[in-house]
Amino acid sequence: MADNINREGKPGEIVVYTPVFGLTNRANKLNTSYIIEDNRVVKKFRGDTECKIPSNGMVVTLYEPFHWSGNLKWEIGSESILIRILGRSFRHTSAEAGL
Image (cartoon, rainbow, N blue to C red; front, side, top):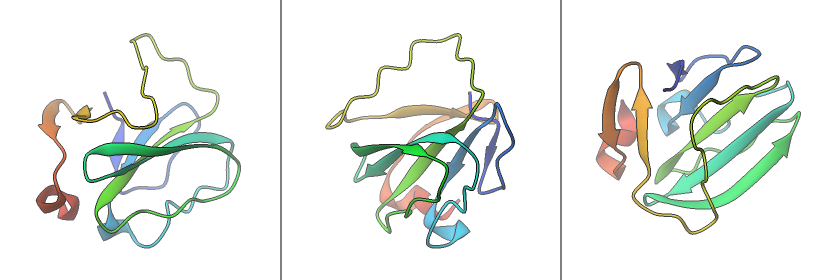
């Protein structure tokens, strides 16, 4: 489950960023980010700098130290990403990028 959407992330949180947030996730703490375009993981990034939010997708950022109890096996090229956000599920589409 994500902790938040389109907000500054805190250590240990999962935050989903859509184009409504801006051009980047503005991350300046150690994180792992999954860049998703057209409902497909296109890149995995790990570092302490921001990454670009695609206009046709979103970025899911896991801020360190992160402890995941679930099974997160997103690979480059994975499709049909189902994300739990704030207690509700949705399948991301371009139309939902404006949440």
